Length: 68
View 1 (tube, rainbow, N blue to C red):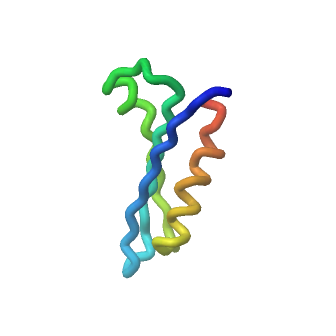
View 2: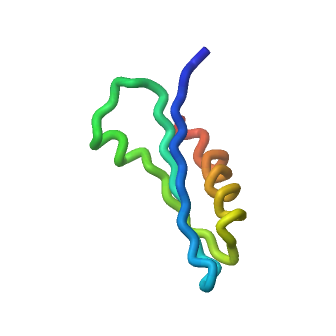
């Protein structure tokens, strides 16, 4: 079985209902910092809440899954 590491985070401004989510997927332990920085995926979300942003951030992975 292939081991992966998924890191995701989001930040939301509830008054503006805008949030940003990001994730990083690591498939092996042989990597360098420059490579990792290039693989972080960011996305802006509008009309969101902190709870909704958590789910939306995880869904980013589905949009970009062909990259991995």
